[in-house]
Length: 515
Image (cartoon, rainbow, N blue to C red; front, side, top):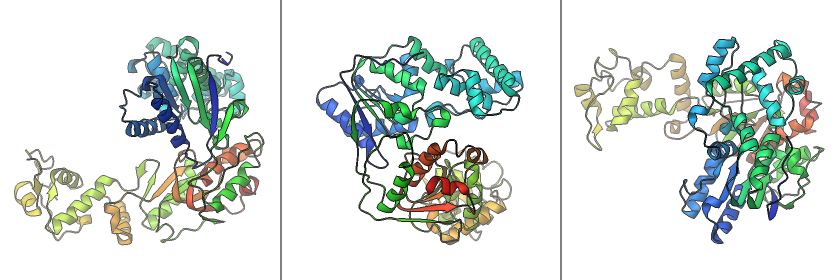
């Protein structure tokens, strides 16, 4: 399969957006200009890499230009664009249940399949399936990709068996996976006629996704491709950033960062200047000086008392020790998308404290409160579900709940006694949190733990960047060091005020990447 170069476009432009330079704002300004000149919204396509990015574009464009989601019909991820264009329905999509069923048939675990629209690529926990996805994303043979991937339990014979079983299963069930859809579009799809095509995060597109984009280009009059090759961190999933670098189009570099301070910019610039194949670009930090330091890991109770924090690592398991220490010191945080203490529990505690101080609470809050109370000890049998008629705006007092709705707990009970279904360890952790900061009951966590890949596009006042590498990554460090420099470049440029680079004692990767 050859890349279609396209001939129908009248103009093509690349917009390079270094960290914090307002790339999304720039792209929406293009949308605004096109709408002002009379281009109908359904003749503009905005292709994002992830569902989150696509939704942000829809919300910002819809709000700014007073347009509905239906009017912005082609503001989508690439997968969603293809799905709609080919008129697929949900019954034709390979689901986690399908993978579980196939796993049972072939006796090979195939769980934890991540939606392609969530991270821009299909992610499987099974190495055989990852090899299969990579071969299709890169346009290589299964054997070539297997050899590139490294040793897999069971060898190439088992990989072939798993993939052949998957292909046969999909044919039998009449379902397709996300990569199948992209391949179908390249072969049989027809793009709608567009006035404007905008492709965001183009550095993360694979060979196959570039084929999709090129086919859409053939039906567009003006094309804007945006991205930053220095932030290309999905090569492990088949991304081809060199494709963006090699495009011989009109080019614009957004040269003013509104996020990155001067001290962080120096670190980031040292990293990328050592990358061999890249687009040279000059961009300025904001005037704020900022603060950057490198030191061995040391956490104490006051480490994260002020501002918003991102704690970033190359691999998820490298955050385990950090999570343990944060809990020990009573810090409230989010890891991935999960808060260390659920908002439901915190709301239940807040509700109980209100009731104890003679305040009335809403019905929904009472239900959350009862959830953490045991039947027979804190709530009478038959009352746990609170199956009652509630008038609009009706509230409840402690006395009313005790008299009419089965509440057995008394006002002199502390919350950890009243909410007796909360485990002892969880109670101790929350008590430590509340001693440190009572505002956690009503405010979201200021600390977020994430992989660097998961934090792409995000930002925080302060960033703690762990330089430890996974064993697998460290083994391949010297053969793919530019890729690692890009990853840590992305991590370092998330900080708006301070950057804390954490070195593991004696780790050679720090020197190889940062020095």
